[in-house]
Structure formats: C-alpha cells, structure tokens
Image (cartoon, rainbow, N blue to C red):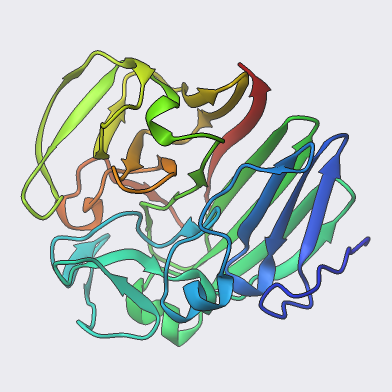
Length: 308
C-alpha cells in the first residue's frame, strides 16, 4: 500500500493524494472520506475548502462530502422504512439542521471515520461499517459502505457501494454535494443542464410529490439562483459549467436517479449533487430503493475538468 502523507488538513494521518498526469485530488478517510481538493494544472476546482477546521466544527458541507444516510432534507424527525421506525433528535452534535430546524444531509462528515483499504498513486478505497450504536440510532440498518475514488488525467471517478450486512432491507437515499467554481464572476459561467423533471417543493424545500417538465438550460448563470430538485429522465446525465475555455462537468453514470442544483445568487460556487433518491425519500417513500440482506447496491459518477 502506497500512502502519501498530506500535512495540515485537520490532522488526518490517513489523508491521501491521488494523481494522474496534470490532475490530482485529496481525500480524508478519518473525516468522512471527504474530498478537499481537485486540481488540474494546479487550479482548484472545488469550493468551500478554504477553512476546513471551521467547517468541521460547524458541521458544514465542503468540497466533495458524502451524504449518508440521506441527502438533502427530511420533513420531520421521524421516519419509517423497511419495517423500522426512527426518531431523530432535534439537537445533535453529529447531525446538521437547515434554517427551519429540519434534519439535513444525515450524519456529517467530521463524525464518520472510514478505514483505508487500499491506496495507489491514482486510486484510493475506504470502507465504513455502519454497525456502531451512534450510527444505528440515526439509521438502524446495518450495512457496509465502500467508496473508491480513482483519477485519470482530467477526471475523477467516485464509485460507492452499499452492502446490506444485517437481517433487514437497507433503504438507499445517499448522495454527494460537490461544490465547484471557475474564475471570474459567477454571472458569466455558462451552465448546461439536461432535460429533467423539476420537483415542486413546499416552503420548506421539501418535495410535494408533484413535478413538471424541465426543458434544460444552456445559458450563462446570470442572476439565477438555484436550490432545485430534479428527477433524471435517462439512466445517465451530464451537468456542467464553463468559463473562459474551461469546463467542469458532472457525469451521473450509474445508480443516481435524482440531482439537486444549488447556486445561491450571492455565492461564487455551484453544486451539482448526485442523489440516489429525492429529498425526504425516507419519509415519503418516493423513489426509495431497498437493498436485501446480503445484496449490494452500487452508484457511480465522474467529475471532468475539460477545455470548453
């Protein structure tokens, strides 16, 4: 096993840099297997990575965070799936809550310590056994998670698998929340989104169950602000931004049925979020898939750093 020490990143002794050609990335297994850097030709593509210590203390999403056991929000503190009921605490040091006080993004990355399985120059794999009491109190479905990040010149592939290790089905509602940015003012970034179904949300940003056709987008971001959920129309989809000859694209390749686009009007970043289910799926059941005991669910997406 080859392990590259990365200093001064929350003190993670297992921090790993993977690289190929002009592209490299850094992951922190001891802190949620979070991606804290993705560079091509030395230029950082990720955002919200400038102060990881403050972000960890505040349970803030940064870089490329893995969201488990649910991505986005829940409408309440109680849910029932696969025959088990759960009541989440309204105040917890390991959970994040949105502006309405609702649970958001599951157990946060600073509290999830993954075990490094393999590390080479261009790939890293880590596992998380979801069997500890703290985790089972939030999501009482034993499982084993494996995350593999592999890099080629100009692209990063992230593959995630979930194996149901107990005697009960495991609901699948995880996702990622990568933050991206390019040079210049966000208003000049060119955004491309495919045709999808636009999920109608209530005042709390919870899907109502209704949706409408979304024609796609091929235009500059301008003054647009996004915090929108979408259902994919095809098994694969690509979302991208471009500026001054450079492009960042997210290819949803396998297992992801939904995405959230997040681009606050007053921030110089945009997030294209791969999601295996819509927000609130643990409560609504909409789009929620179950993994039978002994079976494995896999999902895959790729980030490309290209010339536009």
